[in-house]
Image (cartoon, rainbow, N blue to C red; front, top):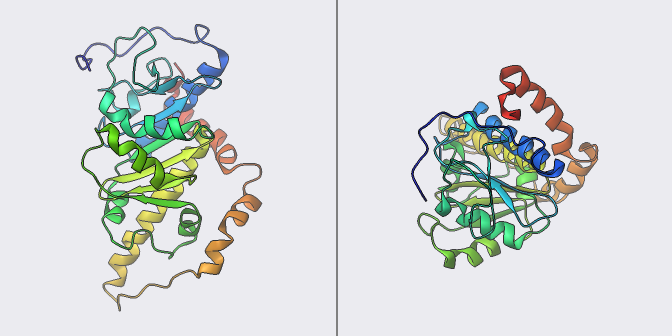
Length: 263
């Protein structure tokens, strides 16, 4: 893994030194890391968001040791599915952290981005036997495409990969039991939008359960017939893709806070 980087964080820009497609992916992925920090979904330097460079089997991952709000387009590290570093970089990566992501990327060629979090809300719901409950509008979109994966310890072993891939299947959302949340998307924007919905679902559930315990303990559930139509409802309101609908506004928000992610 190498030594964790503790030197200065500035580095030469890779803009113009990589393909236009790779640079755009770098900017979008750096934005996703900054947004995760902005929304307080980060877990210090742990968890990962990875993105495939279009037209290749190469992937971008965070430099290990940087806080998510420090990540820039140029600091992201390009690797292959085995975790081999494919560029000159001063930063190490966490090969163990790529176990989950490499499994999903290898199996799901329809997705560009894999996002994984350890949020308090997500872990709290992942520890509940019933998992996600159909008690909010947000939850119906998650339940329409949700898988579960039982906890097998810290994800370090290659032999867990086929079981994890089977748990996800062709779905968008995966709840890692006792661990956290995972989403995939055909773009970075889509994976982020899915995670926003997943995290909101879990936050609402935890609050509703806390409030319910002060009343009669019962919660009003959405009917299965409505959940069955959630996919079609999402398509009707997406205007060509929910990720693409929200992404420009999210980038504008980041630019107002700190446009440094674009470096």
